[in-house]
Structure formats: structure tokens, C-alpha cells
Image (cartoon, rainbow over all chains, first blue to last red):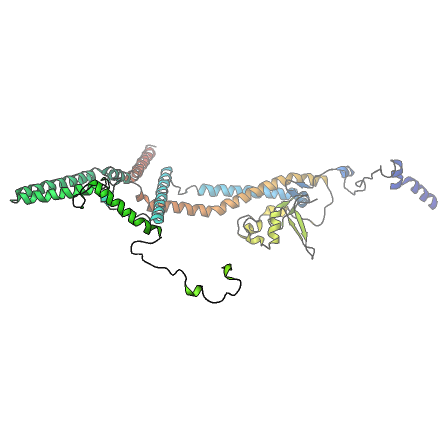
Length: 277
Length: 163
């Protein structure tokens, strides 16, 4: 009877090999690896679940008590939010700058940046930009208009300064008229006139010297006419031409070079012949 | 299949990405990109490279201690599958992640508060000290605004008295 029971059991239980043969043989039949799972519910054997979700491993979160822990977490979060709200209400009194103050601060910073930039430019070009006295101010950069503009930019009223500058210029004119009166009052009229004439002549000659052609004869030079001066200039240039071709520094350069220095042209040659050099 | 962290910068290394170095003592170094791998080969210490998570944790720039980190731990003993537990877990992951992000953001805001306070004080001090650099017109306008503020305060007082 035991042997018979064993035989019955064998007949009932199918081997994996038998299943393979029934379902198409090797290479066709693929056995399910899930059918032997030991789960609380056999329905769950065919479930498909993700291994990763949103950059997290699902397996790391699995926990039988996850529901309770989540409830605790939510409660904790609620308390934390309430506390934050209370703190924010308490901290509303922030010492913030007003909009206008912020704007003024912006202007201050802009002005600071400009000053720094100007200073750096001066520092960079200080040695190569000499200061020119005012009498050589040909571009007329120092004018009353510019002074007025600068004073206005600094926030001052420039009218008083401009009036003072103009009164000073008028004062100078008055001084000139006084000097004329003094000269008229003197008894030596001839001397005064001569001196003024000389001064005028000197100034005229200085101003005219730049625009005069080179052949024009000036009294005192020793030439009788323009042709003679022109001839003299030509002779001077001709006499200098040969000297200039000899690469000398000037009339005083009378150096005689050593064309064959002895220490370079005496003794035996170590290698080669004379024509090598 | 599992998401791992880069040994150097602590970024997430997804499957099919990055490179892996197994040392002679079987320690595994995973790298998310060639940048981290090259830094490793140059023998750089992640704690001293500013763009790494290790540096940020060491210098208090990122949150390191929180209860939400306890929910996500590598488990070396697999649990028997249970559909109900798995469903709860999948729902809980989004909740836990959301709360963690909020707390991280809060941490960063708190950390930057000191700097903002100092900046505010610096601005106020600069405004007070350097107000004279500007022309007087602007300064007068500020004084006028102060006067306006006083008037408004008086009005509020009158309203209170009326009530």
C-alpha cells in the first residue's frame, strides 16, 4: 500500500521536464520563476513594481511601519510650519531701507565709482601728462562757463563766483588805463614814446619771423639784396654736403679711424688660409 | 539594478552611466562623469573641492541631519513582498521627498540670513556716512521726505483720537 501511494503521488506531481515537453520542448518553453514565490497572497506573484522612482531606490524606503512613520512626519511638519509662521510674525520689524534711500545709496555708489575711475586714469598717465600753465591754455579749458557748470554740478549757486571773476578782469583794465595816464603826465614825452615804439617793433618782429620767407633780407644781416642772400644759402648747403656723406656727427668731428689695426692683422692663422677671412 | 552615488561629488549615478574602479582591497569607487574620475586620479580630496557634496556638508552649507533621511536607508535584509506595504511606500516616497526639499530650502535660507543682515547694516552705514558726497538738493529732498513722514504720523494720531 505504501508503494502504491508513492506511485500515485508520482503520477500526480508533474516534473518541470514534463511541462517542458508538453509546451513545445527545449528552446520554446520558458519556465516562470515566480510561480514558487511564498507570498501571503498568491495573486501578488505577477505584480510588476519599479525598482527606482524619481532618483530614489524604492527598496531603501520599504518598511512595514511606513504608514505610522509618515503620519508622525506630517504631524512634525505641521508643528514646524506653525513655529515658522510665529517667528515670521515676530520678525516683521526689519530695518529695511526705503525705496528713496536705496536710490540715494545707488547714486552715492555711482559717484564713488566715478571718482575711483578718475583717480586711476590720473595715476596711469600722471608722468606723461605734464601740467601746462594757464597762459599756454590755448584750448581755453579754463573758462567762466565751465567753472559755473562745475559749481552747479556740485550743488552751489555759481552767480556770485562768476560776478567776482568778471569784476577782477575789469579791475585789470582799469590798471592799464592808469599806467597810460601816468606816462602822459611825465615831462619826458620823447623817451616814453621811443620806449613804446621799441616794444611794439620788437613784438612785431617776433610775430613776423615765423611767416617770413627765408630769402627775405632783414636789416642788419649784411646782405644787399635777396639774390645775394639766396646765393649765400646755396653755398652753405654745398659746403656741408660732402661732410654729411662721410657719416660724421658735425663740423667738429675730425676723427681719423684706424683702418688696419695691428692686433687684428698680425700673427699666424690657426686654421685655413688668408683668403678664408 | 540600483542607483548609486558618485564617490567624489555624491551625485546619483544612473544605470548605464559613469565608470567604476575596484581597488585591490575590493573597495569600489563609482564616478558619475569623467570630471569626477579625473579629479580622483589627480588625488584631490572631495572635502576640499568646493563643488562637491562632501565640502558642502563639512562647511554647513547643506542640511545633513534630519528625520527624513532615516526613511531612506540601504537595507541589507530584504523584506518579503507585500502588495499593501509596497503601495503605501510608493505613495510615501513623494511625500517624504517634498518635505525634505522644503527643509533643505529652509536650511539654506536660514544660513544666508546672517549675510543679508550684515549687508543691510553695511548699506545703512554707508548711506549715513557718505550722504555728503551728493549735492545738497538731494539731501534737502530727503529732509523734506522726513517732514512728510511726520505729518502722516500726526494724521494717524488724530484718527486715533477721533476713534
